[in-house]
Length: 114
Length: 123
Image (cartoon, rainbow over all chains, first blue to last red; front, side):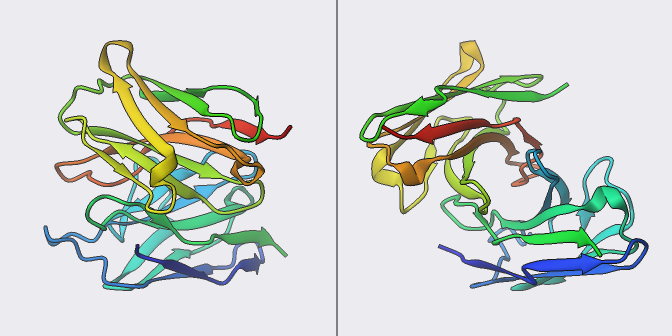
Protein backbone atom coordinates (compact mmCIF):
# COMPACT_ATOMS: atom_id res chain seq x y z
CA UNK A 1 0.00 0.00 0.00
CA UNK A 2 1.04 3.59 -0.59
CA UNK A 3 2.25 5.27 2.59
CA UNK A 4 1.54 8.97 3.11
CA UNK A 5 3.85 10.95 5.42
CA UNK A 6 2.91 14.43 6.62
CA UNK A 7 5.07 17.08 8.23
CA UNK A 8 4.98 18.79 10.63
CA UNK A 9 2.87 17.01 13.21
CA UNK A 10 1.87 20.35 14.67
CA UNK A 11 1.94 23.89 13.35
CA UNK A 12 1.39 26.77 15.81
CA UNK A 13 0.58 29.85 13.75
CA UNK A 14 -0.13 33.49 14.52
CA UNK A 15 -3.48 34.74 13.22
CA UNK A 16 -3.04 36.33 9.82
CA UNK A 17 0.23 34.54 9.15
CA UNK A 18 0.75 31.76 6.59
CA UNK A 19 0.91 28.05 7.27
CA UNK A 20 2.32 25.25 5.16
CA UNK A 21 1.89 21.49 5.42
CA UNK A 22 3.88 18.90 3.47
CA UNK A 23 2.82 15.45 2.37
CA UNK A 24 5.04 12.83 0.76
CA UNK A 25 3.91 9.55 -0.77
CA UNK A 26 5.94 6.35 -0.88
CA UNK A 27 5.38 6.11 -4.63
CA UNK A 28 4.20 8.33 -7.45
CA UNK A 29 0.53 9.29 -7.27
CA UNK A 30 0.16 9.71 -11.02
CA UNK A 31 -2.73 7.47 -12.04
CA UNK A 32 -2.78 5.47 -15.28
CA UNK A 33 -5.32 8.00 -16.57
CA UNK A 34 -2.75 10.79 -16.13
CA UNK A 35 -4.43 12.42 -13.13
CA UNK A 36 -2.96 12.66 -9.64
CA UNK A 37 -5.58 11.85 -7.03
CA UNK A 38 -4.18 13.70 -4.06
CA UNK A 39 -6.66 15.48 -1.80
CA UNK A 40 -6.48 17.57 1.35
CA UNK A 41 -9.08 17.32 4.11
CA UNK A 42 -9.74 19.54 7.11
CA UNK A 43 -11.12 18.17 10.36
CA UNK A 44 -12.25 20.77 12.85
CA UNK A 45 -12.57 19.67 16.50
CA UNK A 46 -15.53 17.36 16.96
CA UNK A 47 -16.41 17.41 13.27
CA UNK A 48 -16.08 14.90 10.41
CA UNK A 49 -13.43 15.56 7.78
CA UNK A 50 -14.25 18.05 5.06
CA UNK A 51 -12.79 18.10 1.55
CA UNK A 52 -10.69 21.18 0.82
CA UNK A 53 -8.54 20.39 -2.22
CA UNK A 54 -8.67 17.60 -4.82
CA UNK A 55 -6.34 16.55 -7.65
CA UNK A 56 -3.46 18.44 -6.02
CA UNK A 57 -4.68 21.99 -6.51
CA UNK A 58 -8.43 22.19 -7.16
CA UNK A 59 -10.39 23.91 -4.42
CA UNK A 60 -13.66 22.18 -3.60
CA UNK A 61 -16.93 24.08 -3.64
CA UNK A 62 -17.12 26.74 -0.93
CA UNK A 63 -13.47 26.53 0.12
CA UNK A 64 -11.89 29.96 0.69
CA UNK A 65 -9.15 30.98 -1.71
CA UNK A 66 -6.64 31.35 1.12
CA UNK A 67 -6.27 27.57 0.80
CA UNK A 68 -4.07 26.35 -2.03
CA UNK A 69 -2.45 23.08 -3.02
CA UNK A 70 0.59 22.32 -5.10
CA UNK A 71 3.04 19.57 -5.91
CA UNK A 72 3.59 16.65 -8.23
CA UNK A 73 4.63 13.01 -8.24
CA UNK A 74 5.36 12.21 -4.60
CA UNK A 75 5.63 15.65 -2.93
CA UNK A 76 2.69 17.87 -2.16
CA UNK A 77 1.97 20.99 -0.13
CA UNK A 78 -1.08 22.65 1.37
CA UNK A 79 -0.76 26.35 2.10
CA UNK A 80 -2.99 28.67 4.04
CA UNK A 81 -2.10 32.23 3.04
CA UNK A 82 -3.46 33.93 6.17
CA UNK A 83 -4.63 31.71 8.99
CA UNK A 84 -7.98 32.54 10.55
CA UNK A 85 -9.41 31.26 13.83
CA UNK A 86 -11.81 28.94 11.97
CA UNK A 87 -8.84 27.15 10.35
CA UNK A 88 -7.90 25.47 13.64
CA UNK A 89 -8.03 21.71 13.28
CA UNK A 90 -6.22 18.72 11.84
CA UNK A 91 -5.36 18.53 8.16
CA UNK A 92 -4.93 15.26 6.28
CA UNK A 93 -3.62 14.43 2.86
CA UNK A 94 -5.28 11.51 1.12
CA UNK A 95 -4.37 9.52 -1.97
CA UNK A 96 -6.83 7.64 -4.15
CA UNK A 97 -4.51 6.67 -6.99
CA UNK A 98 -3.72 3.13 -5.88
CA UNK A 99 -5.23 0.36 -8.00
CA UNK A 100 -7.28 -1.55 -6.99
CA UNK A 101 -8.75 1.38 -5.08
CA UNK A 102 -7.25 1.71 -1.61
CA UNK A 103 -7.33 5.09 0.03
CA UNK A 104 -4.54 6.04 2.38
CA UNK A 105 -4.24 9.06 4.61
CA UNK A 106 -1.36 10.97 6.09
CA UNK A 107 -0.93 11.01 9.84
CA UNK A 108 -2.41 14.49 10.15
CA UNK A 109 -1.07 17.96 10.95
CA UNK A 110 -2.60 19.96 13.77
CA UNK A 111 -2.93 23.67 13.06
CA UNK A 112 -3.34 25.76 16.18
CA UNK A 113 -3.14 29.42 17.04
CA UNK A 114 -0.10 30.66 18.96
CA UNK B 1 -28.79 18.03 -0.73
CA UNK B 2 -26.44 15.05 -0.50
CA UNK B 3 -26.17 13.46 2.93
CA UNK B 4 -24.83 10.25 4.44
CA UNK B 5 -25.75 9.01 7.89
CA UNK B 6 -24.09 6.19 9.81
CA UNK B 7 -25.93 4.03 12.30
CA UNK B 8 -25.08 1.04 14.42
CA UNK B 9 -24.40 -0.12 17.97
CA UNK B 10 -22.58 2.15 20.39
CA UNK B 11 -21.07 -0.75 22.32
CA UNK B 12 -19.96 -4.19 21.21
CA UNK B 13 -18.19 -6.94 23.12
CA UNK B 14 -14.86 -8.43 22.12
CA UNK B 15 -15.18 -11.24 19.55
CA UNK B 16 -18.62 -10.00 18.45
CA UNK B 17 -19.47 -8.94 14.89
CA UNK B 18 -20.13 -5.25 14.22
CA UNK B 19 -22.72 -4.24 11.64
CA UNK B 20 -22.86 -0.61 10.52
CA UNK B 21 -25.29 0.99 8.09
CA UNK B 22 -24.74 4.08 5.96
CA UNK B 23 -27.98 5.58 4.67
CA UNK B 24 -27.54 8.00 1.79
CA UNK B 25 -29.83 10.63 0.34
CA UNK B 26 -29.58 13.13 -2.48
CA UNK B 27 -28.00 10.61 -4.86
CA UNK B 28 -28.57 7.04 -5.96
CA UNK B 29 -26.29 4.10 -5.26
CA UNK B 30 -27.22 2.82 -8.72
CA UNK B 31 -25.69 5.90 -10.36
CA UNK B 32 -22.77 4.68 -12.45
CA UNK B 33 -20.37 7.15 -10.84
CA UNK B 34 -21.29 6.77 -7.20
CA UNK B 35 -19.36 4.69 -4.72
CA UNK B 36 -19.16 4.71 -0.93
CA UNK B 37 -16.24 4.05 1.37
CA UNK B 38 -16.05 3.29 5.07
CA UNK B 39 -13.29 5.02 7.03
CA UNK B 40 -12.57 4.90 10.76
CA UNK B 41 -10.74 7.05 13.27
CA UNK B 42 -9.61 5.78 16.68
CA UNK B 43 -9.77 8.42 19.43
CA UNK B 44 -7.04 11.01 18.88
CA UNK B 45 -5.63 9.18 15.89
CA UNK B 46 -5.56 9.44 12.12
CA UNK B 47 -8.09 8.29 9.54
CA UNK B 48 -7.95 4.71 8.28
CA UNK B 49 -9.73 3.50 5.14
CA UNK B 50 -11.60 0.22 5.48
CA UNK B 51 -13.56 -0.65 2.36
CA UNK B 52 -15.24 0.69 -0.77
CA UNK B 53 -18.19 -0.44 -2.85
CA UNK B 54 -18.51 0.66 -6.46
CA UNK B 55 -21.72 1.34 -8.36
CA UNK B 56 -21.37 -2.00 -10.20
CA UNK B 57 -21.15 -3.80 -6.82
CA UNK B 58 -17.41 -4.43 -7.04
CA UNK B 59 -15.69 -4.19 -3.69
CA UNK B 60 -12.26 -3.21 -2.43
CA UNK B 61 -10.89 -3.83 1.05
CA UNK B 62 -8.06 -2.70 3.29
CA UNK B 63 -5.24 -5.21 2.97
CA UNK B 64 -4.74 -5.46 6.71
CA UNK B 65 -8.43 -5.95 7.58
CA UNK B 66 -9.71 -7.77 4.51
CA UNK B 67 -10.31 -11.07 6.31
CA UNK B 68 -12.67 -9.39 8.78
CA UNK B 69 -14.65 -7.04 6.53
CA UNK B 70 -17.65 -7.37 4.27
CA UNK B 71 -19.22 -4.43 2.46
CA UNK B 72 -22.55 -4.62 0.66
CA UNK B 73 -25.35 -2.35 -0.49
CA UNK B 74 -29.10 -2.32 -0.87
CA UNK B 75 -29.82 0.16 -3.63
CA UNK B 76 -33.58 0.12 -3.02
CA UNK B 77 -33.00 1.21 0.59
CA UNK B 78 -30.12 3.58 -0.29
CA UNK B 79 -27.95 1.80 2.24
CA UNK B 80 -24.39 0.57 2.40
CA UNK B 81 -23.62 -1.99 5.10
CA UNK B 82 -20.25 -2.85 6.62
CA UNK B 83 -19.69 -5.87 8.82
CA UNK B 84 -16.52 -6.42 10.82
CA UNK B 85 -16.00 -9.71 12.58
CA UNK B 86 -14.08 -10.59 15.73
CA UNK B 87 -14.13 -7.11 17.24
CA UNK B 88 -11.32 -6.12 19.61
CA UNK B 89 -10.84 -3.10 21.90
CA UNK B 90 -8.35 -1.68 19.37
CA UNK B 91 -11.29 -1.37 16.96
CA UNK B 92 -12.81 1.32 19.19
CA UNK B 93 -13.25 4.28 16.85
CA UNK B 94 -15.58 6.66 15.10
CA UNK B 95 -16.69 5.05 11.86
CA UNK B 96 -17.48 7.28 8.88
CA UNK B 97 -18.96 6.63 5.47
CA UNK B 98 -18.04 8.93 2.60
CA UNK B 99 -19.18 9.30 -1.00
CA UNK B 100 -16.50 8.83 -3.61
CA UNK B 101 -17.55 9.55 -7.21
CA UNK B 102 -15.56 7.78 -9.90
CA UNK B 103 -15.60 8.93 -13.51
CA UNK B 104 -15.47 12.42 -14.89
CA UNK B 105 -13.58 15.43 -13.59
CA UNK B 106 -14.65 14.95 -9.98
CA UNK B 107 -13.28 11.48 -9.46
CA UNK B 108 -11.67 9.82 -6.49
CA UNK B 109 -12.45 12.55 -4.02
CA UNK B 110 -14.28 11.99 -0.75
CA UNK B 111 -16.65 14.88 -1.32
CA UNK B 112 -19.36 14.20 1.25
CA UNK B 113 -18.92 12.60 4.68
CA UNK B 114 -21.37 11.42 7.27
CA UNK B 115 -21.18 12.70 10.83
CA UNK B 116 -19.76 9.39 12.01
CA UNK B 117 -20.85 6.86 14.58
CA UNK B 118 -18.76 6.04 17.62
CA UNK B 119 -18.24 2.39 18.48
CA UNK B 120 -16.67 1.19 21.71
CA UNK B 121 -15.44 -2.36 22.07
CA UNK B 122 -15.48 -3.48 25.68
CA UNK B 123 -16.67 -6.37 27.80
